[in-house]
Every structure is written in C-alpha cells, then in structure tokens.
Image 1 (spheres, rainbow, N blue to C red):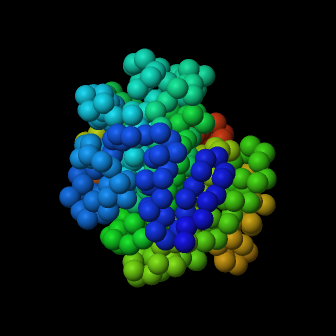
Image 2: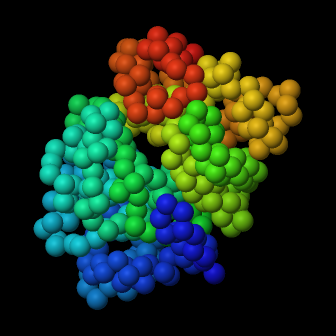
Length: 377
C-alpha cells in the first residue's frame, strides 16, 4: 500500500501508488490533463498503465516530444499543443526531462513569454507567482527528484542551460511508484542513481544552514550507497528499486539548500545541443574532480559523508566515487562522452554564471572551473 508524505508537496509513495492518479486529478479538479512524456516511453505499456490509472472519460492527450535535455523549443511546442487541446492540467510521466519540461509549460500557461525572463540568473525568481497550471509528477526513474524539486532546467535556443527556480514550480502532487522503474535499463539505472547521489552529496556540502535538509541528504546517500549497485545488477529487485526511489526523493527534498560545482558544470555541459549529454552521467564523471577541489573546506563534512556511505575514515572520498563509477560502468572522462577541448572555455564561463555556483562550499573562479574541466577531460 502506498503512503502519503507531506514535505514541500504531497507525495504518494509505494507499490501501486499510481492507482491514486484518478483521485489526485479529481482533487485538483483537472478533467482533461495533458500527459507529458518522451518517445521512448510513449510506445511502452508503462504509459498505457499510467493513462488507464487516470480513469478518463475520453481519449488522453499525449505530448511525447520531450528531448533528452528539455529545450525551450520543446516547451513552446508542448504549450501550443496543451492550449489547442484545451487541457486544464498536466501529468508528467518519465524522468527529470519530462517533469522539468512540464514545469516550464505549467509556468508559461499563465505567465507571459519569453521563458528566459524567469531564469534565476536573470532575476526571474521574483517574477514567478502561484498562477501555474496544476501538475502531477509521475517519475519512472530514480534520480533527478524533480517530482518534489523547485527547479526546472531548460536548454535555451542559444545553448544556455538555465535554471528556473520557485516553490511554485514544485509539482502539486508526486506519485512515486517503484514498480514503474522496474524496466529501467542498467545503464540508466546507474546514471540516474548517480544523479540522486550527487544531489545528496552537494546539498549536504552546501554552506547554507539547514540541519533538517542535511539529515535528509545523509539518509538518501545511505540508501543509495547501499542499494544502487544491486538495482543496476538486479533490476527486478523491488526492495532496491524502492530504496533508490526514496533516495532520489530525499535528494530533491534536501536540495532546497542549494547544490554546487558538480551541477554548475553539468548544467553548462548539458547545454551543448549537439552532444546530448546525460545529466546524471555528467554528475558521476565530474564528482571526483569537484570533491578534490572542495576538500580543503569540507574535511568535517567529508567524514560524515564517509559514514553514510559505509567507508572507513582513512578512505579517500574522491577515489571511492571513481571506484563506484567503474563498478557502475560510467564513462571515465568527459572526452569519452564526446566533449572536445574547444568546448571547455565556454563551459567554464557558463558554469561560473550558473545558479548552483553560489552554494558550492568553496568559491570557484572561472579559472578553477577550467582546471576542473581539464582534470575531468
């Protein structure tokens, strides 16, 4: 049986939680939702299962044009489709890309364009108000935690990946059913799992004072450290899937206190349209380098991270993540992912300007970012 969590938003969590979708739509007074997903899911029985759980009286409206990194153009397409279909709410089904795209659509439904004016680095946080479309998030991966997060990451037409941040962008309801992740392939299980771990680590290291968030981050890290490898190696293990979905949820619950340079860099690299780089994979590759940069300012917190991960205190934290990446089959470098040297200069500048940089525990300069990129290259 699923159970309800009220923290930031309403969360239906547990096996068969998806059965609550129809009731949640009714409570939100949504009669004609737009299902936002991607083409990889739209042709699978999973999306059919979600739609059937909505108990609609008419054919479902489905937008499946979500790219691997959601784009401004895709937001505009989905918004046009939503208006033409006269939908009055959104159900986002998939990973963080579909949920982030849905958030941007929900925002622009009653907020005037252009989207860029609402970006955090453009001073847009204060421009976002409560007049957003009802949104139910149904994650099918255990990684981004976007189902309870206040952020939407969108790649703009000029290749900038910008963050849109507001408590009003947190979905109205999150339905977290670990059974929906059982079919996730091993590599995506690993990559999205490393995203969840990166959220727990970076939000714990953030210098902002928020002890409850730090406690949640450590619990999420403990769960993910114990169960990620099992979820990758035995995807049908429902206990492992359940623990990873909770770890992802907790990572996002905690990152109300901000992230850090791992995300500054992965956001910047994710804006390179032609490469279509996976966010969680980038986080995995960048984590050891950023940890080495942060270590001089984080020795006490590193000790607590090691405890949560079941490591000995004399273990090197960055090396532990390098070994985990190898075990999970992650790439060993940015160049292996297709990043080229000519990208690094621009990416360093974008990372410096990213909203996550302000909460990195050690203030990085543009030169520091460039050095980190070269080390991970």
